[in-house]
Every structure is written in C-alpha cells, then in structure tokens.
Amino acid sequence: MKINYKTLAAIMLIVASITAQSAPPPGQLLASMCFQCHGTNGQAIKFESIAGKSSREIYKELLEMSKRKKIESIMDLQARAYTPGQMLQIANYLSTLPKAPKSGDDD
Ligand code: HEC
Image 1 (spheres, helix red, strand yellow):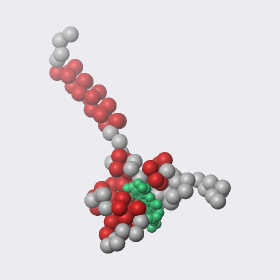
Image 2 (tube, protein in one colour; image 1 turned 90 degrees about the horizontal axis):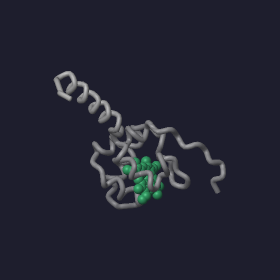
Image 3 (cartoon, rainbow, N blue to C red; image 1 turned 180 degrees about the vertical axis):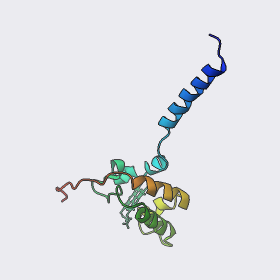
Image 4 (cartoon, rainbow, N blue to C red; image 1 turned 120 degrees about the horizontal axis):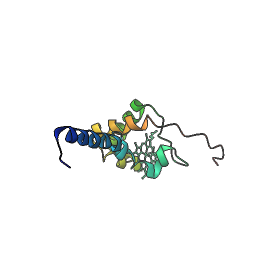
C-alpha cells in the first residue's frame, strides 16, 4: 500500500483520538495515592471520606496541613509531598467524584 497524505492524515487523526481517550483526567494519578487510606475513589470505610467535597475545601485543608509547623498527624506528612499546584489538581479531581453513601453500620 502506498501511503499518501490523505492516508497519513487519517492515521494521525486515529492516533490522536486514541491518545486523547486514554489520557487520565488531570489530578487522577496524584489523587490515587489518597485512596490507600481514604478508600477506593475517596469513599472511606473508616477514615474520613474525601470524595465529593468542594475543591476549595480540599485545597484549603491540604495547604493548611502542609504548612503546619509541628507534624500532628499522618496527613501533615502526606500534604507535604505536594506542591500547591499539585494540591489544586488533586482537589479539583476529588471534587468531581461522587460522595460516599452512608454505611449505617458505623460502630
Ligand atoms: C497514610 C494514610 C493517608 C493517606 C495516604 C492520605 N490520607 Fe488524608 N487523612 C488520613 C487520616 C488518618 C486522616 C484523619 C486525621 C487527620 O485529620 O489528620 C486524614 C484526613 C484528611 C482530610 C481531612 C482533614 C480535616 O482536618 O478535616 C483531608 C481533606 C485529607 N485527608 C485529604 C487527603 C488527600 C487529598 C490525600 C492524597 C493526596 C490524602 N488525604 C492521603 C490518612 C491519609
């Protein structure tokens, strides 16, 4: 098969659309670290749920925890691992996730 410009353009279009589809939403990879403790997709079983909070709220909390002089909890260490720009990406992504349903058997 001879490849002319039209064929090449078509191939490039296909490649571009595949790449666009497989790119994860911004912040998703960074936020996947949080799910270890905060539950799959941020819907916690025991620890605090972080899914479905407002982006502003999550960003504010992360920034605050990262700046705490004395490390008071495990989160203060977690928060220190990110730049403010990354925190914003994480917060924006987490705010798009659905809230955890109330489990009812929280004892
Ligand atoms: C190693 C376990 C662990 C990881 C990983 C972790 N967290 Fe937490 N997180 C906790 C615990 C435990 C608490 C509750 C105690 C506290 O407030 O520090 C908490 C609390 C929070 C709170 C509520 C703070 C408040 O004062 O209401 C937010 C928001 C939060 N985490 C966001 C995140 C985000 C975003 C990530 C990922 C970047 C993350 N966490 C990763 C364990 C973790």
